[in-house]
Length: 120
Image (tube, rainbow, N blue to C red; front, side):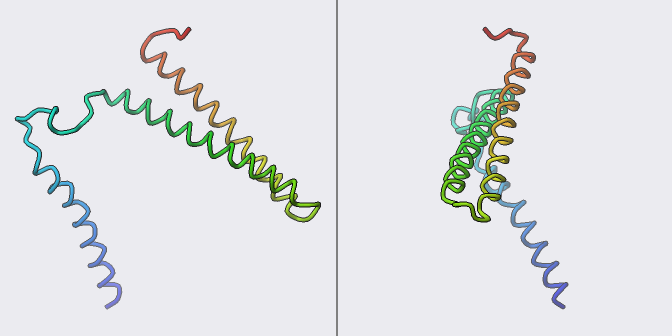
């Protein structure tokens, strides 16, 4: 009986999640145009590029916070077992910064290749 109620509850949740966008989109009149819909007029390409840049910025900020946190942990460890934890944090932070830089370079490279422009 419990399995049946879990399945029924899951099915009801899925139906509810799929019906909410229909209620919201029912209020949109395509005859009014996009100016009254509060939707962005920019292309999907520019939205994707901006999203990638913000995500890379977030990764960089988190990596720098981890770098500072590992430095504080290392200084306050005083030779205990926390030294190993601090070096692990430091390693992951450096890897995070390198991944963010590679991602930033890749996004800019793809952006310039798709636009067929050379950045100066």
